Length: 482
Image 1 (cartoon, helix red, strand yellow):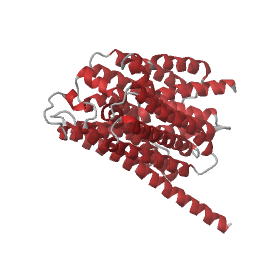
Image 2: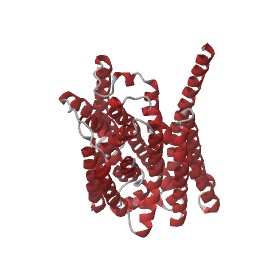
Image 3: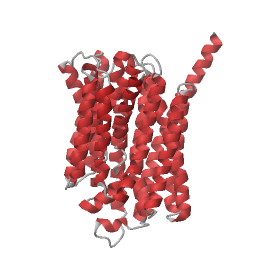
Image 4: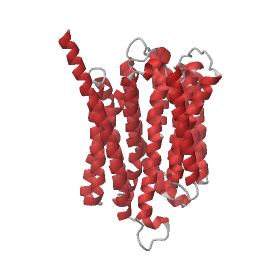
């Protein structure tokens, strides 16, 4: 029992770092813009490079976990994460910082499906739902804690420590994993399986990169369009081949026909889109439009993290007793309402005590929403998946979330940059001049971003509520027939 808990702790530490790194960077965008004299969209590449490589290699790493020793893959993943954090923190140019973050994304992709699959294996006999609920709660807490960690290091040092802090925590997880995690059996990986899963990851990255380049640096639009068409074409062909010939290279055929699993992946993707996109407009709202100081920003960020930490574990426990879709629906609805509230506060109360109080309330609601939504999704996705397919299912579940997260980061950065470029203040020539305190340009950009995020989250809440109502009606009909 002691070894089981310690192994679970090591997995949670590794996964905490992975998810925290998805949200630490947006709060340093203003620092990156000042240090490297780049646009918001260029600064966003630091986070998007992580998200894109993370999403691109998830499916392949899931198959590697099913085919080789998962413990060795996790050890390798943690080492890659540490090296990437070192390179990114030491980077003297934006390209070097981006390269380090991309390497961290590769490590995260190797780790995530292995940790989720290991939990299903370790708790195969008892406690699987509770463990997955805690694992999902860790994801929610980590994403909420990311901005808090960033703000802490910005006050005591600079943005580089946001990267370097990953190293000691990763090494702690590495020691626990090496000592307590059991070795898994291996069956080898066929060449065609490797190619299919690799091509699937490439197609995802090509689509996301294509969207980024279409609205990126001048002269990259045609390249972006080509990547978008190429990636989309490969993705459609792979899915058609998978379903027509039942090859089971991506997912076992029974999971393709498991509507609950596929719906859960979609809901997780919508949540990932909203949460990853959320922190870019939030950072500019509180730092520029509201012109809050370090103490106020810290309070705002801690509020969401605390709400998530309190609600997440409770939500995971409740998902074993009540209909998970209902809990997810409430969570997504609360998050959408909080985002909509944040979009309005920049207009009605830019700065001041009233604005701070309203934003704190909104962040508490947002933290409650993410806490309610994260844990039940992980439990719902894998509760009917066999142990032989858990690696593929875990990888696909995480691919869905991270692909939408990466797309959310790219789309919001492009939208924000577009609104800023179309709403430049007359007489400004340097990019830093557009980001003066209480800037109306920043308000317009953050409002557009928040409205898009709220729409995405509301769609997820509607979808979850629709199917939870359908399931309840089906259950009542079965009871009447009995």
